[in-house]
Amino acid sequence: QVQLVESGGGLVQAGGSLRLSCAASGSIFSINAMGWYRQAPGKERELVAAISSGGNTYYADSLAGRFTISRDNAKNTLYLQMTSLKPEDTAMYYCADLSRIPPAWGQGTQVTVSS
Image (cartoon, rainbow, N blue to C red; front, side, top):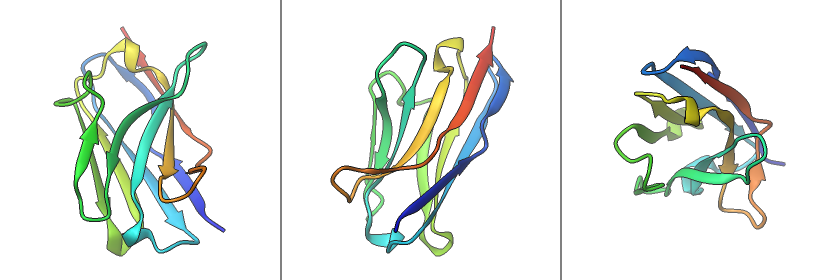
């Protein structure tokens, strides 16, 4: 059974940075496409970024240049480096194993950006 555990969220001022981590277990992490999603209160969950097993990346148009997704297959860990954070980035951030239908989800980590 896949387990995804996110960490690294918190409260940060606008313009600050955070790095989220997602520790994966229960699957062959290195061959799985992985992604980060976020959901703000009252809004639908949206894709932030995704990364293939080979390291190809995709970003939501509005986030490219500020967010960087990466993976360390040796550590079975997915990362999301977030810079120049804005109040509108405030949301619960979820890690997802995209190799599964439906995707497997973590429990989420809260990111709050104060103005």
